[in-house]
Image (cartoon, rainbow, N blue to C red; front, side, top):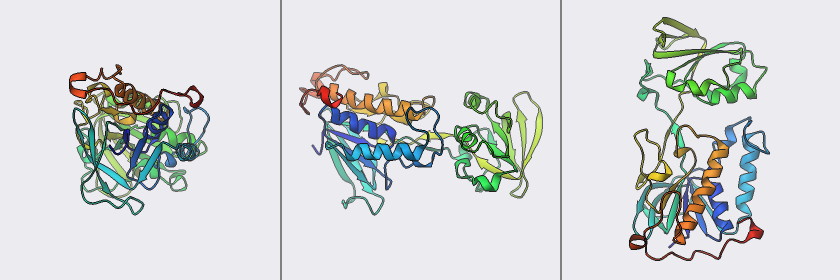
Length: 332
C-alpha cells in the first residue's frame, strides 16, 4: 500500500479529509491536478457563510498552511486521477502528470491504498447541453465570475443562469451600477433567493431562451414560465449556468443526475464535497463532508459501521490497523 488513505481532489473537502485522517493516525496522500490546493477558492472575493474568514484567498492560504503543518499528510500537485478501481481488499487509482510541478511517473501509474476519498468537485456545465438554452453553438460567452467590474459598471448585462457566482459578484461590488438581467429555468428558482432583493437584478424565469446573432447588443428571445414571449437585450452577455459533477472514471457510482452520493459507493470509496449533491455546494458543508469521509474510512479500517454501511468481513477481510487510537490532544 502506498498510504492508508488516498484523497483525490485538493479543494476544501479533500484538504479537510487529509487533516481529519491525520488526527486519527492515518497517513494520507492527496492528489491535486492544479499547481496549488484550493484553486477555485482563490477566485472568490467575498465569503458570507464561512466562520472566521471573509474571502476565498485568505481561507485558501489558511488551509494550505494547515496542510503544511500536517506531518501525516502528503500533497502531490500536478497529478490527475483518471481511473479508480475498487476491490475487496484495496483501491487503486490511476494517475497522470498534468503540470510541471507534478511527480515524474510513467504513463498509467497506479497508487494503492485501503480506502479512497474522492473530492474532485464539479466543472462548468456545457451550454450546448443545457436543454432550455438555444443559439449557443459556437458562441464564446465568458463565465460571469471572469467579468471585469470596470467593464460592466454602468451597463446592462444578460446573465444566462442564476448560479451562485451572481450573488458573489453582487456582494463583492455593492457600488457597481450594473443592471443584471438574469434568465434562468424554473428548477433553479431556489438559487435566486440571495439576489432577489438586489435592485440591480431583474429575474426572468424562462422555459426557453434563444440567443440572437453574434453581434452587439446581445439579444435573446425568451418564452417565460407564464407563456409570455419577450426579447431581452443587453450590452454584454455572460454564462452563469451552474456546474456538473466531475468524478474520475471507474468505481465512483453516480445517480441519474450525475452526482455521487456517499451512500451509493463501494465500501472502500468515500465521496465528499460538491461531488455529492447539487443542493449542498457550499464551502462549509464541503469541509465537513471531507472530515466525515476520512472518519468513515478510519472506522471502516477498524471494522466499525459507517454511514455507507459496515465493511463485510467476508469481502473486506480483517480490519487493518492504520494507526493508534485517536489522541484527544490532537483533536481526535
